[in-house]
Amino acid sequence: MGAGKPEDIIARQAEEIERLRERVESEQAIHDLRRALTLAAAAGTIGAPVTHDRLLEMILDTAAHVISARSGALFLLDEETHELVFEAALGSKADAVMKFRVPLGHGIAGLVAVSGQPIAISDAESDPHFAADIADRVGYIPKSVLCMPLFYGGRVIGVIELLDKEGATSFGPYDMEALTLFANQAAVALQQSRTHHNLAELIRDVLDIGDTQQTTRLAVVVKEHPTFRSSLELAQLVHEIVSEGDDETEACRAMLRGFAQYLRLRPGAGDLGPR
Amino acid sequence: MSSRPAWSAAFAAESLPTIEAIPEIDDVTPEWAWGESTGAGVKVAVIDSGIDADHPAVGGSVSGYVAISEGPEGLLFDEEPHTDAFGHGTACAGIIRSLAPECELYSVQVLGPMLTGRGGVFAAGLRWAIDNGMHVCNLSLGTTKRDFFAIFHELADDAYFHNMILVTAANNMPIPSFPSLYSSVISVACHEGQDPGIFYYNPEPPVEFGAPGIEVRVAWMSGAWITATGNSFAAPHITGIVTRILGKHPALAPFHMKGVLRSLAANVPRPRL
Image (cartoon, rainbow over all chains, first blue to last red; front, side, top):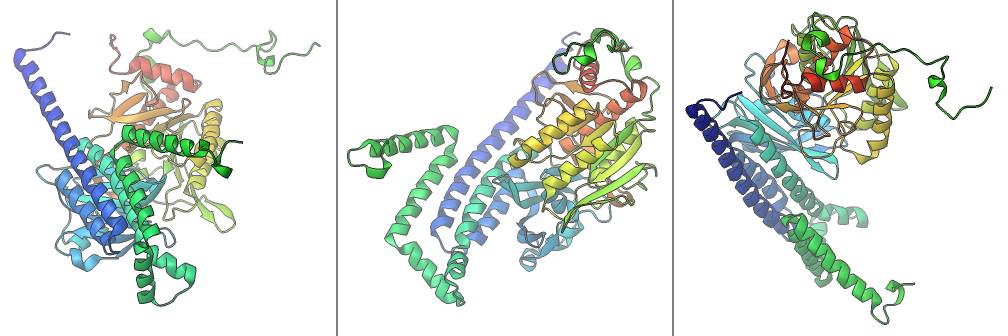
C-alpha cells in the first residue's frame, strides 16, 4: 500500500493534530476540574451542611461546561427505595424539580445505574419516550444525551446526565472519556461531602435526639471542638495530597509510614513497639 | 489394568478421538469461516435487559425467555415471554440478528428495577445459559465488585469447557470489570468504523477484539431506533460473526474461535477471498 497523495497525508495529519489538540484541552480541563473538586471537597469537610447541595450544583455545572453540554441533571441513588433522586438540574425548570424521584426500572439514567455502564445516545426522534424522565424536568426534549454512573467503592452511588452537545449532533468517545475521569473525582467529592452532610443525622441517631435544631447545634460544637477540628484538618490535608495523583499518594504514605515506624521503635513506645 | 495418572484416560490409544481438521491459520478465509451461513441452528443467549421480539430489528422470533430476579426466598426464574424495559438488550439482539438472521435468540433478562442482589442475578443468568446448552452468549454487561471475581471466573471457565463462546463488552470506564477481563472470554471494545463486518485484533489483552460501537444505529425500546455509543454495541457485532461461524463449523472450541477471528481481523494483512 502506498503512502497516498500529499494532500491526503496533510489532511490526515491535520485530523490527527486536531484530535491531539482536543485531547490536550480536555486533559487541561480535567486537571482544572480536579483542583476545583479538591477545593470543593475540602470546603465540604469544614463548611456548613448546605455546601453539599452547592457541591452537587457545582459538579453538574462544571461537567456541563467542560463537556460543552447545554444542560444536565445529577441523580443520587436511594438504595432502600430503588430510586434515583434528582438532586441538581441545569435548565429552565431546574428549581422545580429538586428531590424528584425516578424508579430504577426505566429511562436512560435507570439503565446506566443498573448496568453501571455509561452510554451516549442521539438522534432519537422516532422514540416517543426518549429521555422522557428528564425532558419534563429541564423543560425541553434533548437531541443527544451522555449518561455516566458515579462509582464509589465499587458501587454506583448516582448518575450524571448531560444533555445536548454544543456545536455537534452527539457526544463523542472523547466526551465519554473526559466525563469518566471527571465522574471518578466527582464521586469521591460527593461521597465525602455526603458523609459530612449526614453528621447531624448520625449524631441524632446515636443520641436518639428528636430535635433537629439541637442536633445541628451539637454537630457544630463537635466540629468546632479542637480535637475534632485537628482530625478534620489532617484528613483534609491527606485528601488534598491523594487527589494530586498516585505518586503524591505513595510519597505521603511512605512519609507517614516512616514516621509511624519511628514512633513504634522509639524507646518507651509500649504496646505499639515490636514484639 | 494399570492405573493411570488423573485425566489421562482421554489420551489412551483405545479412546483417543480423531478430530476434524481445520485449515492452517493463514489459510482461513471469510468464505471458509462464514460463507453462506445465516447462523441457523446456533443458540444465542443475550444476557441483558430483555428482548422486544416485536421490534423489526428482531423480526418477531425469540426462541426462549427467562427473567431472573431476587425474591424474598432466593432467585426467581420466570420463563414467560417478556419485553425490554430499557431497550439495551433489544439493541444487542438486533445487531446479532442483522449479522446472523436465522440464529435462535434467547432472552436472559437480568437488568430490572432493582439493584439488590444484581451480581447474583447476573451470575445466575450466565449459569442458565451454560446449563441450557447455549452455543454463544452475549454479555454487554459486567460487574465491578471484587466479591464476584471468583464466581464469574468459575462460570467463564465452565462456559469455556462446555464450548460456549462467551462474548463480553469491556467496561466503558477504565475500571476492572468481570468477566470481561478473563482469558477464557472474547472481550470486545469499540472502534470508530461503521462497517458491521469489519473487526480488529488487539495483540495486547485483555481486550482482544474491536468492532463498531461508536454512533451506531441500533434498535431501542417501543419499536424505536437510536444512535448510540458504547462497548455494549461492539460486543454483539462479534457475537453475530461468531454465530455465523458456528453455523458453519459447530464443533469449533473457544480457542479455535479466537484463532479464526484473529486470522480474519481487518488489521491482519492478507489476501482476502
